[in-house]
Image (tube, rainbow, N blue to C red; front, side, top):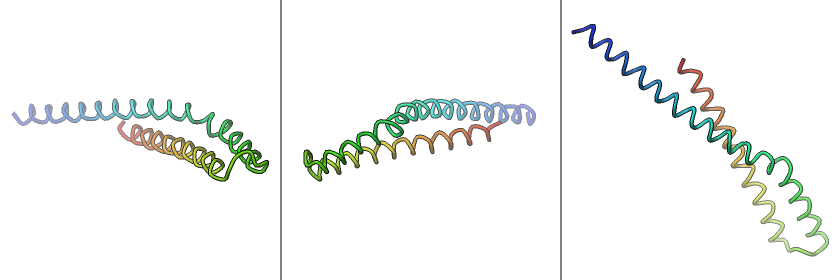
Length: 99
């Protein structure tokens, strides 16, 4: 009976580890998708949007609030991107410790 109990506990542990791996794999895939979606925004589009908004503000075609909105949107996109990178890295680290 003791051996059967030990085998059952080992199998239950394996199943928990397998489920946790699956959860982390899903999280990594989801965060990798978010990283890809926001990377172009953060690296290419947002800097150009901020530059154009700054020029328009200096030219007087937009007000200060519109300029702040552009800066706020850029910051928000960067925060989402940075959080996705952090979550992906954490999930990857946890995933490697499950072996």
